[in-house]
Length: 284
Ligand SMILES: NC(=O)c1ccc[n+]([C@@H]2O[C@H](COP(=O)([O-])OP(=O)(O)OC[C@H]3O[C@@H](n4cnc5c(N)ncnc54)[C@H](OP(=O)(O)O)[C@@H]3O)[C@@H](O)[C@H]2O)c1
Image 1 (cartoon, rainbow, N blue to C red):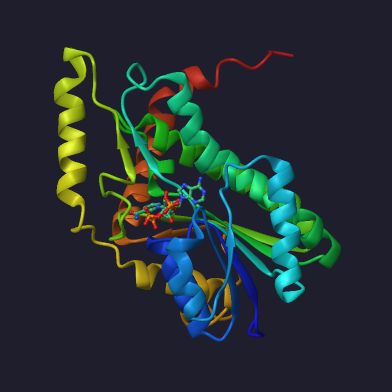
Image 2 (image 1 turned 90 degrees about the horizontal axis):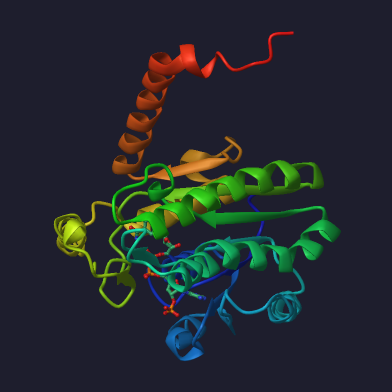
């Protein structure tokens, strides 16, 4: 896929989203940068992107209208990147129902609803690519990180199911799973650290929040390189040339190490518990 593509990206006011827009322009493609506030992406418009106000948690009717508006800009969309997201942390007991739902509304239903809005266009063209930005957090849960981890687990399942539904229609899809990358993601404004009300969780939450604060600005992943790798895969350029699109694209040595560990531990778990796991089929 080396011809000029038209992209739309959610959440481009900072981090991966902003870098996507700049690199897409640099490769000679067209891009619609979207954000909740247009004033935050004026610089992307000045750089040559089209811009559109888009909150991924808007009702479906609004998202459907936004997709029509977006398609009208260049007459087509080839690639949708569901990038918008934030990190909600806290124990199951401390994070109330509304706050869990908010996390899912952005990270999960935002991506689902925006994708649904563009599907009529992709189905009509019998072509299109949908990228879901998941996370290594979707491979391994950790204490006091349930809202974020589980939202990315959900996105992984949604992306795998969607890829299987969409492939026969000529539509490609992949979930990208970065490790820790140096964006503004862990800044206190962007990550929702829920303080615990319970003495029993104090050490646990303080440990995680302290570690996150220490990681901020020291994450090993280079977001420029991460975005370049995604563009290479979508455009089948560079190291990805001629290799097609994987269902999952892990990014970062930390992500590779986590998935390897999870897979080995899962094999161990199967071995240790297989006698019980395999003892429950009907006998006839
Ligand atoms: N950086 C990492 O280490 C890392 C690792 C794994 C996965 N990820 C994923 O990468 C994606 C981008 O994160 P990032 O690292 O680039 O962090 P970031 O710099 O904080 O960017 C997050 C973006 O999402 C936008 N956003 C949040 N809620 C939104 C909504 N309701 N509608 C539209 N946009 C919304 C934010 O826009 P506003 O300015 O409007 O808030 C911001 O532009 C996220 O899905 C994140 O989970 C990041």
